[in-house]
Amino acid sequence: MEWEIELAEALERGIQEIRDGTGVLFSGGLDSSFIAFLANKQSRKVSLHSSGTSNSHDKQWTKKAAGMLGLPLEFYEKNDEDIVNGLSEIKKLTGEKSPMLLLIELPLYFVTKQSDCPVMASGQGADELFLGYKKYETEDTSKEDIRKVIEYVVPMEMKIARSNGKELLYPYLQRDVIEVANKIPFEGLVSDGKRKIALRNAASKLGMNDEIAWKQKKASQYSSGFKDAVDRIARKEKRTVHEFISDL
Image (cartoon, rainbow, N blue to C red; front, side):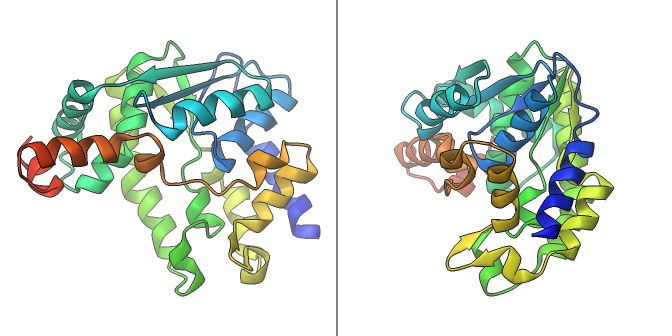
């Protein structure tokens, strides 16, 4: 459809800041994969960077997805001590108190800490713009959610990245991309239990692997294995996750 072509063109403009040597914060999902695919399609030398536990879904899937994309992958495997120290450090850096948000930002913290790439591209914002969350099937709060991402989450992530000597790029939060996303009707984004349809179609039509384009992926705090690890650590201490993280 016409807006899918317009979306693809906007995203291709949105990645213009990606230069050779840029790393992509990679989960193997649609959002980060599409950024990497488009950059590679434009002959930018990019690499993929992910983090998780030894038995996480992401450790297996990111390797497979990187192979499909034909791009090099660095996977930073983390143990319990790393995870606890990472959560504590993010709390100190940002002042954030939400256990879930702290868990969500762990992959970003670990990747920016260990990667040699001075600039990292993020898929942040795609779920809010293209209705990637299940809650949007019954209540569309996406406009308010994207405002929170831009005004609160992005500054927090930049603080984390800069503490590790890195800069972040947000292709999905470029004005052109947001304007196109706002034109797409609800049924062009959510239908028959599938979400982010327009973005998936755009990726597929431009030639990205369909298995990646249409894969339904869990949120990063789960697929990375970090949430399960913290659940287990907290249980050992006979505490809730909220109690455990609050006292770090």
